[in-house]
Length: 180
Image (cartoon, rainbow, N blue to C red; front, side):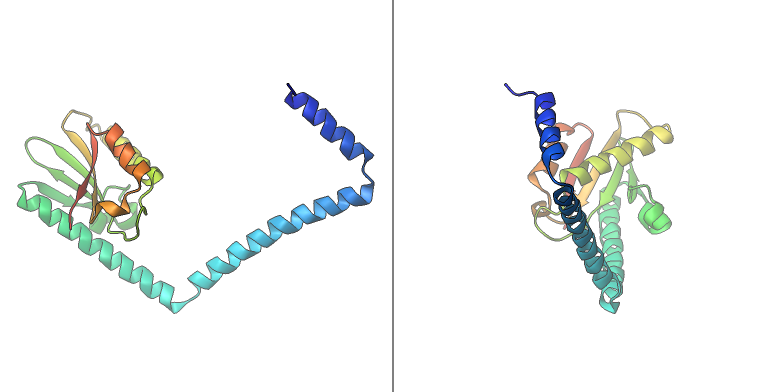
């Protein structure tokens, strides 16, 4: 079995035997590869952010998100919860919690995602929601068995299998709820 140390020694010996101009060409080729990837990414970003359409799309998405938060809040109010609309109040500074809904039995920390596109909510987003809620609860000394973290979504198809698995693993205190 070949060890990593043996492989490194072989590579070092090969490099020592190469002419300097070959090493120089390899370094230039690697540099050009990284530069071209960075340039392509920059170009795509500039193209996307410099258009009037992207600003309009951004505003449209903000409005769509706020309307969905209002809809989810109303859903829980009709179920007898007292709802704090944090997304509307704090905007991007809501610490990942759009709504806090309370009744005598439980406190719900709700993140609303009115996204489209199959599998657009990944396991990382699900973990982020769980983490944001946990941090908020600890910071505000609200830890108890009544807490529930909820991801409100318009359809299950936007949830990836990996994200769904995160909710299954943490079902006791973290769930998703489909609210159309």
